[in-house]
Image 1 (cartoon, rainbow, N blue to C red):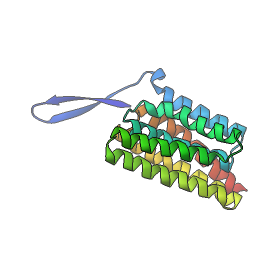
Image 2: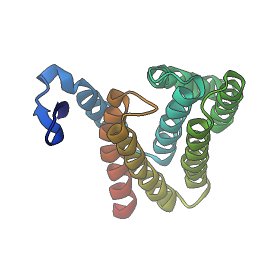
Image 3: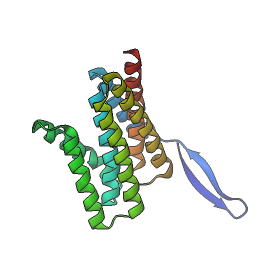
Length: 193
């Protein structure tokens, strides 16, 4: 639910709720459909790790180019980096690492706001680093870690949705409803063994 502000001289801004039409919830629906598809196809450590690392790279892309809409295009960028490196017989994280490196260099060259670029780079290092660690440890523990990292990325999504910064709210909403069900499924599968 979004809000509109109106002001009065006596009491300042007043938040009044505004209902979105059903089609206004498309990011939630698409996020849930993508999560459901991944769950049906099969939840594994690698797929969950790719999801969290790619998600973090989308936020970094928007920060590097200082354009919120670029986060959506970042899905294509990260998917391309993963796919090309896997087709070349190289682990996917090398391609994603190169893509992230290019984003940081481009962001610095374009003079993107330092704080925003630094925050998203640090987030990429944390989320991506933990996703990589999940691949290198015992399978069940790795799946649990990947699921936990993905669910924690939903908190990062919520922060951006709430502040309405870096990425469009639609991207943050999509990510929340992808990250939580898929991360929870990974955690449940890891626990159930």
